[in-house]
Image (tube, rainbow, N blue to C red; front, side, top):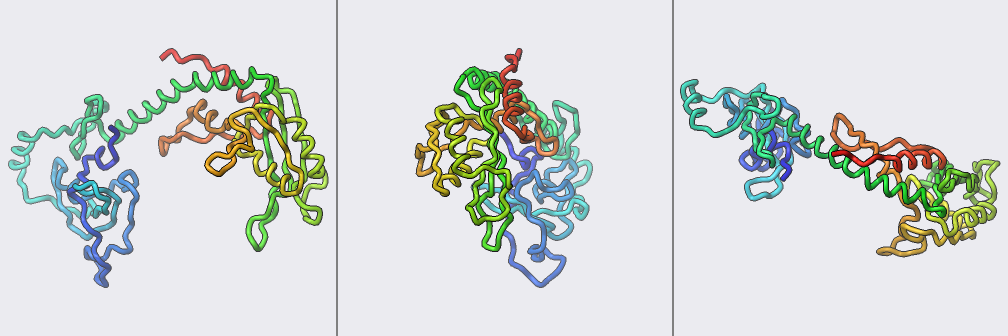
Length: 337
């Protein structure tokens, strides 16, 4: 079971929980907390702030010496959501325990304060991971990231198979849509002016590259080179009908089709998978195209060093570049591990 940052650092959220006191005109007291910072989770709390229970559990225990300096969302002993008061470590003071008393307490304690991975001597007791190891916050994070990386590595084979099947199908069409948005008006967002639809087949050969006008005849600002909506709709019908569509975003083509329909030029694609555009699912139209963005991001497996989360992949920008990228995914070799 994954532990949160409070558990990783040895913070006893339940013991440190207390109700936020009412606002008071007094300054420099516990009541003066309305202007203090509230943190959504323990991972966002700076090292300079901690809970009263954490101060007490330090290897050299301390106690608050100043007012509450912030709050963090947590749970109490009943697992009920609450806010936990935070105190400045710099304002804390040593408890009255003598060195001899602390030494005796250490001999009786079963707390582990040395990280099994890096050997850090932590001030807070370490919790045991699922594999039996006691890790500091950083090593626990590294272990979690390694598990994520291992999962991404293991999943690349399935992504390669998906791309192979897509590119092996002669009915596949790889689609890229670039929308020309209208300038925002006083009433909010306006319909798009035009859209470039670029399509290649499973071999990378061009099927369509058209800039279609999506604005009414009296709307200004549409590109002069855009073909009329009727002509664009006919081109989309010829190029895409009956094909298995894949794009960066499964919904990228939807606003184009909706706008053409609003202008009286409906495109009936009857596309193959993931579902037809006309099919209703819980009252909504299902995605028209197989979406590649998330799959490509997982295949790349690049993690943000600050957050440890998967980074979004940069957009290819055209259908033929997306086709090339899908080919890279399809060539992924099975993991040896």
